[in-house]
Image 1 (cartoon, rainbow, N blue to C red):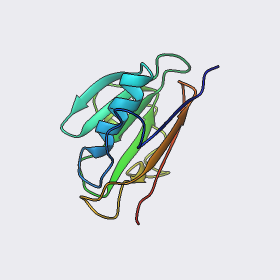
Image 2: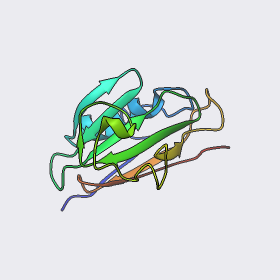
Image 3: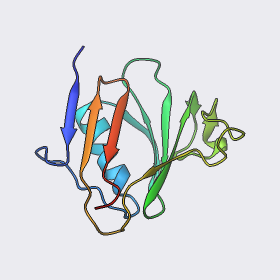
Image 4: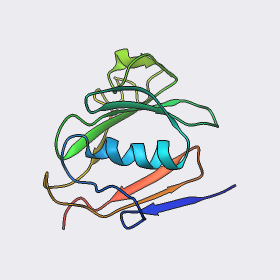
Length: 132
């Protein structure tokens, strides 16, 4: 099994800021361009990704606000984003976390933040420096 490792200093890597859409730009590059995931649904700063192998559940992303983004998994999806109506079998459920989980991108909308990404192609870890 191959392990993939990227950082903000990897050749061609996009920057991560607190601006709306910044996380989706980064995930497009990491997941779609480098790992072969598909972007099943998209909208303005909304996306739904699906791994090429494994359980093939979906990752919904809502990157419409500054400083943080919301994410939620789904068993199936019919639209981009994290709203419970975007698919079936959401995790976490609305009772567990009504808005999904949050990824904090930056404490400032314009500051570039360092990030690290590790994946085996079916799952990943993404960490970043939220502040200075």
